[in-house]
Length: 417
Image (cartoon, rainbow, N blue to C red; front, top):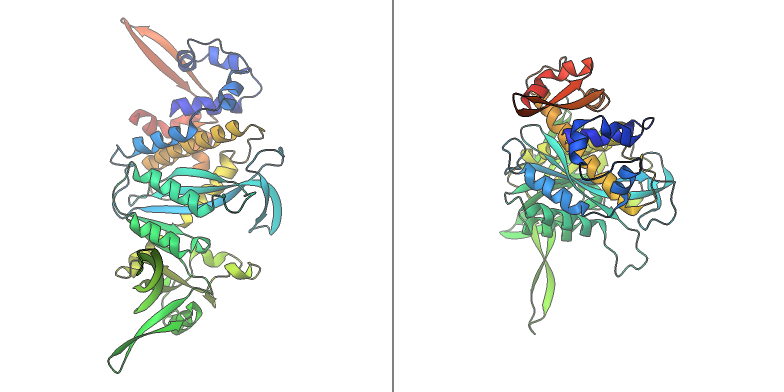
């Protein structure tokens, strides 16, 4: 963690020469012992095209080796994308004009597809990111679904257990659902207004599948939703969805057919998403909504309550986006170098991983009044004056860390490491 902290400190303390800071710090001296450190050293490090994707994969692999951070069966992978405004360059290949759904305005930015892990013990940390490129040719483009598939397959290189994937309604795609189930992922999302659903009925001994809209299902359950206080939900039975599958035709060719598959359908009210304004949303992306109630769907028809609880954890990735932009400089990299952008994002993900773990470690035994916020952790660990010096004690070289008095609040965390 101190390696990441020192790199952050080098970037924050812009008034003093980077070379001067490094010469006063024993740890940085050890890190750059073979090199002559100057003001441009950090810039060259960040603009050199290293294998940052491999760095991210190694980080995730290392997290799976510790019991507290390893993903286990039933944990949640949040999938979402966010914009990073970058009005300082025109020729970077991944920059384009995109509409911000919150401000309803267009901005010159890059679009990142992100995976985040949420564990049962309450710990949440970022996994991977991919930058979406606006396609010049529709036939050769990589969609956000393609990027999500690539990252989930990367995760499968170090994690084998069955996991949940929680996503918003934009990622409602049947082909993507088939991919998830094929690779041992369970999925949960929110139904759109035009999502095609069917109810299984038995008439005169014959099975029929009657089309039903998500809005109709919500209206049926609405009176029961008003009975409870706070978050209220009603699971609806015998709801199906047509899912594609491939088979061989008469002439041996591969053909795609569809079959009815049971799904979990849960009408819920007073979710986090209820706070979002939906009146100005695009028509094609309008959710299935009735008087503030929504419909959550999942492939786990046998566990509708668990599916709803998993979808509630999707909000953690929105919190990550907000804290990364407000407290970690998510949008503060103004460089026109593509390599620098990837270095900035991977180091930010590593920093957030260490911060999330430290925050979880400090708060897990504290009450809500005693716990620390994410901003306090950033202020206390990264904005605190810290100097590292080496000293020989009885023939053994030791490293001493001198911290500001602010760090006394995190004494238990520092003693732990």
